[in-house]
Image 1 (cartoon, rainbow, N blue to C red):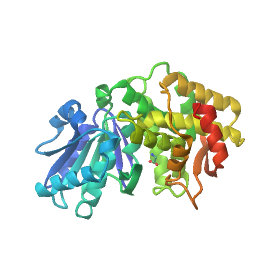
Image 2: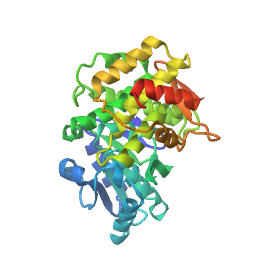
Image 3: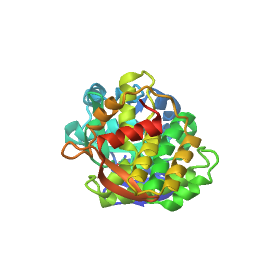
Image 4: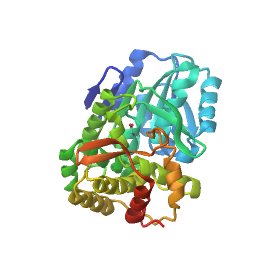
Amino acid sequence: MKEILTKQFNVFVGADSLTQLSELLIEKSYTKVFVLVDNHTKKHCLPLLKPFLAQFYLIEIKAGEIHKNIQTAQFIWQQLQDNNADRTSLLINLGGGVICDMGGFAAATFKRGIDFIHIPTSLLAMVDASIGGKLGIDFNGIKNEIGLFKHPHLIAVDAVFLKTLPNVELMSGFAELVKHGLVANKKMWHELQTLENVTPESIQKYIYQSIKIKVKIVRKDPTEKGIRKALNFGHTIGHAIESASILKSNKPILHGHAIALGMIVESWLSCQLNYLAPKDCIQIENYIRKHFDIPGFDFDINDLIQLMGHDKKNENGKIQFSLIHKIGSPKLKINCEQELIQQALITCLQLK
Ligand code: GLY
């Protein structure tokens, strides 16, 4: 097992991380331990966690981004209250990004904050959502509109959970791992080129590398005033695609797939603005198209641009991008004209 220790939070990565977790629970002697699951993680992941826990209360919610809302947060608060959770209780979030974001949000606000631990079970949550203290819920169709920054007490990352994950979910997380290479680690990006198939086994070593990249950036800039914005590469376009898809479809595109598309478009923008070399832009597009199934869309360009207007990076009403300057190095706070964004969507995604 590897440990990444910081002043605010610790990350345990590897097979023994759940043993470490059970030792911590004994040491901290929490009055009550609650475990938040969704219907998938209850079935596939809870049986793997149970041997490491003594007594606990289970809180179950429905899986999916459409449930990451105030009603579900209220349900979690209600369960905590009905079972007499107090300030020395603990909430363990066992699941993907939605469980970590929303469970963390519910815990951080209940009685002004109780301890919480993330046990990410999806690749996306392991390398991204569980790290960095971003907590929240979606509101009025806008992703993560309501939330706060607060770090979990511990993040225990065990790749055993990836075996329970459908391939489409694994690929969703792989997009964030690729992003970490593109914005901060050229060497990892080059190594990823040699990966023929993305499987839980083939990506194990990149999980730790990816977490280290994210922790390093978060430590420098915990509340995203500067360098942490680099982690939003692909997200201005990607979040708009994801939000549009949630509003339009009952089987919306997954976060990472939307971000993969966003990275194609934002690499094109980086190239048009003469930051990124054309050959690197082509390499990124080819790599993403090789690994990700890109669905066809009928999104309206103006709807997407309107959704980008809600992006948290925007300043003075201007849509702001985190682009790349060259591979492994970010270019932050770039305002793009609406015409250029439209052109990018037409060129890269064949939107009309
Ligand atoms: N997912 C980007 C960040 O945590 O900053």
